[in-house]
Image (cartoon, rainbow over all chains, first blue to last red; front, top):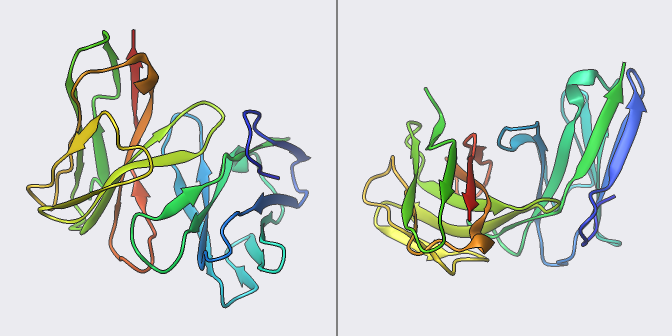
Length: 114
Length: 113
């Protein structure tokens, strides 16, 4: 999972497997979280979000789980495909809904092998 | 819609030079931001704007200026480039203050020698 540091965590999976990417956030006041996908040479792309009043939210092939007790966020990707290979970032909104307060994690590199 | 566009895609500067990174969006979004991304790190907010004529500092504003004279454009100015500003710069816009679902541009890769 993500943590403060210089080395990006990596996850390698086989095509068709399920992937779980973890993120530990730092601010207990954060009430909004987003997962982004960033492919090489491109800007981040929104995947899914969740508010702190929820524990789980599902999208198309993706599920985000939030555990506020231990300040942990995870992204589950079902039936992972080669096109899912990218860097995945979690971002937390540091208190309230004020714009411009998103804090990004360092990212996790996901590699999907055919 | 073209979405969020950024120019140039790549730029090399010498220390002390100035330049402006351009960002434009055609989605009529009120909220726009500039981030920098350094190797092995997530994005860090430089400056942001919640509407035309309104800007504010983010996490790492030093060495950068912004202005927002129109809804569409949000240029980022480097007054005197330093090697520490070598990075990839992303502009983003958002339609909704609460949702914060930002649309990112393709990025500008800046190298300061």
